[in-house]
Image (tube, rainbow over all chains, first blue to last red; front, top):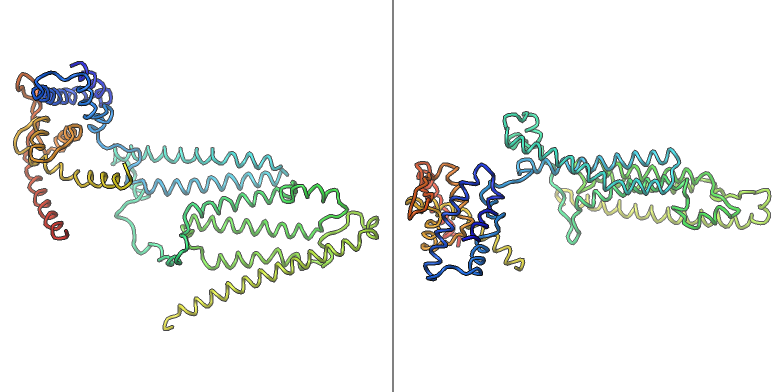
Length: 347
Length: 109
């Protein structure tokens, strides 16, 4: 039967060459016996359509051949956990180092927003390359470990997860129960926070050279207006940059230390109190020193009253913001201490 | 195939996988070649795809649980399989395990 020969030929192409003749000879004997049975039951040879249906039922040649092979995988279950861990860590470090290095370079050279865009566009390519290399290394480790287990150094075996050498005492502490109705924090969310934290820092660093990134068309108006921002705004700006960088680095460290699911209280308090610093810096400045005249000797008489109004409004605005932030902080601190008080034993 | 049907099919295949090995080993206390083994199992109510059975038999042989021999029958060369001495011992252990699991499942159900 020509169709059966073609079928067996197709299966043979997907078999390992060492065993293919033996497997095909056996498969042929089995299928021919089955075919004879079918033809005997019908009392006639199978039609073309019946033959096709029969072979279709046996299966796709590639799949039939695959069943004669041992289960294959590039990275096996023994090291897959280590692979995921290393992949996450490598992606995290590579991404952060790339972004931080480029942000520093752009800031140091007084780069423009377009440069930052190119840096951002380079991130997916970099991450893909790092992931490909990590995967390749683990594929090689898997292949070597399977073929020549005796050649794998003991240290490497332990590093990849020796199931006999771990201490239950080193398991992380129990996590707090998730509040009802509150979605659990995912790893992706924690990574996104870190990435956006660094990106925001990069964006902030570009603002002094490219004020339109913050003010949009307002930057052109400010440029053309008789007013200018007082030096205290630069102190305010750098305190925000420092705060942002501190938050991003802290979140990054928590991520690497596997403490991303439940950030510590200290981190929350530091972030909240840190948020007060830029406000205090502005309010500590003289009330009339937020906005200045570019040419006071020419414009003071004409614009002095307007300038005073602007400075008073800015000062009042920041006083209100500070009051709101302090109240919010007090409310959260009160809630926290109330919870601690209620959780005390014997209560 | 709906999600539930798919889930059931996966669980069914998982449940059958171990049972098939036991059935094949038990059936090969007598000598068979691939196709007649398939028919013998089907006659006892256990229908297995040829594309699953034939590779399974070869794997069991590689593991030393079966022995095989090429022999001519009805003017055609066929590979006949039979349980090896190791296979006999392992089958006995598996049957004991099967009985124990079966008893436990019966109790649970």
